[in-house]
Image 1 (spheres, rainbow, N blue to C red):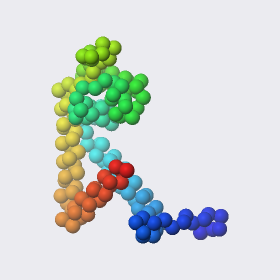
Image 2 (cartoon, rainbow, N blue to C red):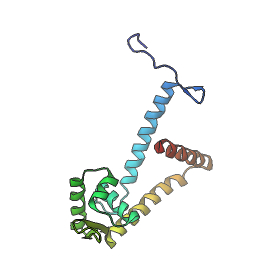
Image 3 (cartoon, rainbow, N blue to C red):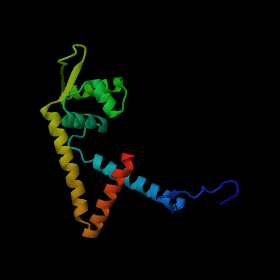
Image 4 (cartoon, rainbow, N blue to C red):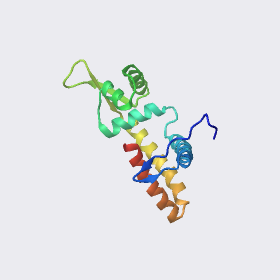
Length: 159
């Protein structure tokens, strides 16, 4: 390492020295593996003309029930005008319907149609089947390693 690029000071995690280069390599390897896995899983959808964002909105409605476009925008971390366009596209395609809000006449509630619920359920089934097929190819020890990694990753993202 050159003198113009100082090495980061050693830090400790519960008293153990951290190997920053090893952590950097692990971070890159995990990022690449997670992105590729997520990309492959996203490709396993039941309706090709649905965008990932549209499918995410449908899945949210499927799990949480009817929501206003504002609530959906907040949940999906997008601006309200973007959500309005997404809801309009989903409604035009027959995946959601809008109805008046029972408590606020200025609002509408968005809920999935049968076609919307089916798209979510079939996509989930396809994604689960894709991952199940690949996990079944691993031996018990490899699956146990991935189970431990999954628990750790959930802890990492929960912070």
